[in-house]
Image (cartoon, rainbow, N blue to C red; front, side, top):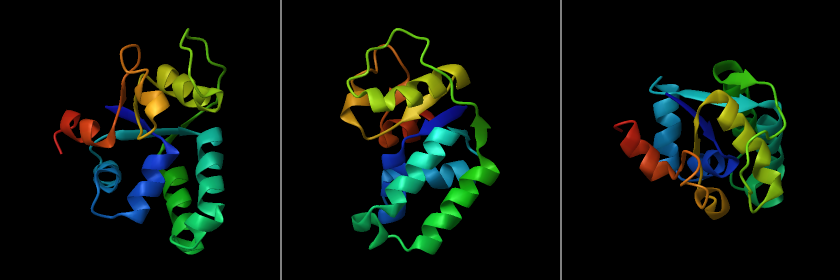
Length: 135
């Protein structure tokens, strides 16, 4: 099984080690599913870690280690234009939809705009994804 973890899931996982997003990340590191990423996603994660409100709660060394972990252990796919007919309420999220579409992967997110696409795409919350993978 493959999944694209939205940046909000990664940040939430590091902010709250007992929450559903952290359990999703632990399932990934345990090999339960394959995490698919792209350069755009990696750049977005790095940008989020650099926000001052995040940087005060997640030390830069921890953030850097996590990005290194992603680079070493995710399948990094090329970013491609969105070729499917999904109107995403936030155009900045289109790269995630394209990535998941080409990777044939779930999008795991806490973003309501993306979750609203669920009837047409396999977009699920961290809690729902944990149920799917039996964790």
